[in-house]
Amino acid sequence: MADAAAWQQIAGLASERCEQGSQVLLVCSALAGTTGALLAIEPSTGITDPVIMRILRQHAELAKKLGLHCDTLLEEFEGRLERALKACAGHDSPANRAALVALGEWASTRIGHQFLSGKMSCEWVDARDALTVVDEPFPDSGRAWLSARCETGADNALNERWSGLATVLITQGYVAAKGSAGTALLGRGGSDISAALLASRLSATEAEIWTDVPGLFSADPSFSPEALLIRELDYIEALEMAASGARVVHPRCIRAAAESGIALNIGDLSRPGCGGTRINGNKGVLDSPTVGVKAVTCQRGMLVMLLENLDSRQQVGFLAWAFDVISALGVSIDLVATSETTTTVAINNVDNHIDQALLQTMTDRLSERCRLRLFADSCCVNLVGRGVRTALAQLGPAAGLIEEQPLLMLSQSANDMCLSFLVYPEHAEALVDELHRHLVVEGTARRTPGIYGKSWLELGGQR
Image: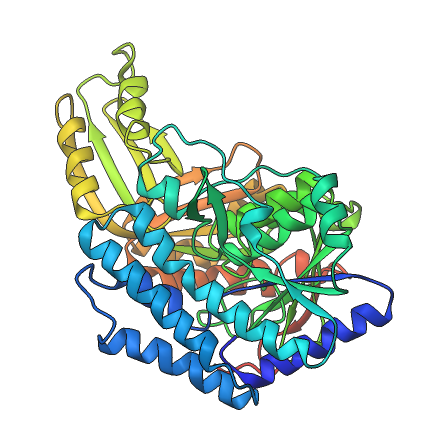
């Protein structure tokens, strides 16, 4: 969003949709780097800090490249940043941090609105008028403010209000209202979540996710340059891919679209004509159990905890107690495996906003009844596809690679769509590449027409 060329593409796409008779709602993220910088900045930071000055300069440069004169807008942005920074300096709560970070989307969409208004009928609307977060069991936790949830469902009154406005509307992604005056965030990558939620609110038929890659690939191209573009997925398979590490679209975006029957079209904003991935409820050959593994994904930053107990399976309530300890801290568990003496759980550090203080509290409480071993930075390599258990018989030479590396956990999902290997981070890249080559590039799905498009390299990607 920091590139003037991207805004020109957005204007062109919006004009095309309007010519086709549609009213368009643009849901936009912050400029590149802004969200991460504001999340990480020290609470004592002032408006003259180099990081803040870089953010202000980045927005001013974009406005200049777009030919805009928006000194008043930029001054207002600086004033809002200064007030939010002072609030964080007084009390760096999740609520104050969320209010600070949300200013990135406010500024980018205000600049975008001014640019688009010179080309078409365009109005800015506040996403917080349409999206309100649901109550969390721990309302003051980081998760409640920084990775909040909203319900789907049509809002006829909102639809009527916004339909009476301009043919093109622009609003912030990533943000929602919390309470009477609070601003919450929907988690990293939350702009696509916002798009699906707003599409649901407005009873749209589809949502287009324009990003910096053509769509979902069969593996991370940085690991496997031979990764193939996946043309079409149903909601369930796409959700499994996103939840297991495919970062192009957020799992909560897919879930929101599925609940309302909205199709998602993912494309590359810089190359809108090079194809993409469509996610919908269609069935047929694409979800045949014979297709097998369609993708190999990788989740970084996984916390693995081994809870060692002398008799955990026969000790009534041990698992319930351990899960209660973890859930009471607002933390969700991704994977679990049990044995006669040990329970292993895997937790996503990033999604759960686990910092050192939270980790220490969790380990202290769990240590009351079991011995703990922690692996704070593991990777989860996942095989995704219908009937994925059949992949075990197809591993072939890749099985040797697994045998050579320490395996913290092997887990199969209950719906037989994901097989997960928890490994040390230094082994993840080689494992992804090897599994992808044997199970996807040379696998059953590759030989099934209609599933894949061109490879990352064929689309002009770099090794």
